[in-house]
Amino acid sequence: MSRNNVVQDHSNIWVFQTWAAFILSVTATTLGVINLPVDPWVKGFMGMGIIFTVSSSITLSKTQRDLHEGKKISSKIEEAK
Image (tube, rainbow, N blue to C red; front, side, top):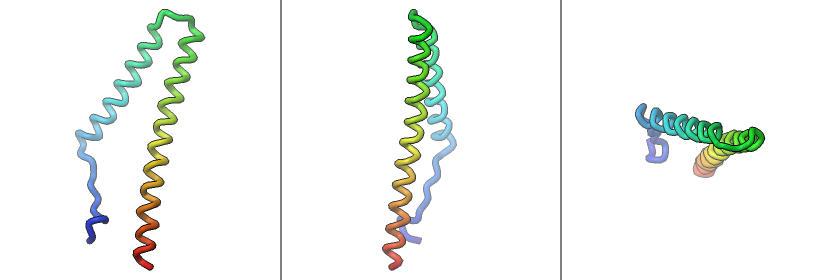
C-alpha cells in the first residue's frame, strides 16, 4: 500500500470537540441576537444572516472536500495510465 492510500480517521474526542464548538458558537450567537435591544425585524434579519452563514459554510467545506477528493481520484487514474 502506498503512502497516499493511508486513511487516517479522526479520533472520537476530535469529532466531539468540533461538534461541541459548532453547537456552542451557533447557540451563543443566537442567544446574543435574541437578547439584542432592537426591533424584532432587526433580530429576524440577523437570524437569517446566521442561518445563511452556517449553511454557506457547510456547503463551502463540502465543495472543497469534493474537489480535493476528485483531484485524488483523477491523479490515480493518470497514474494507472
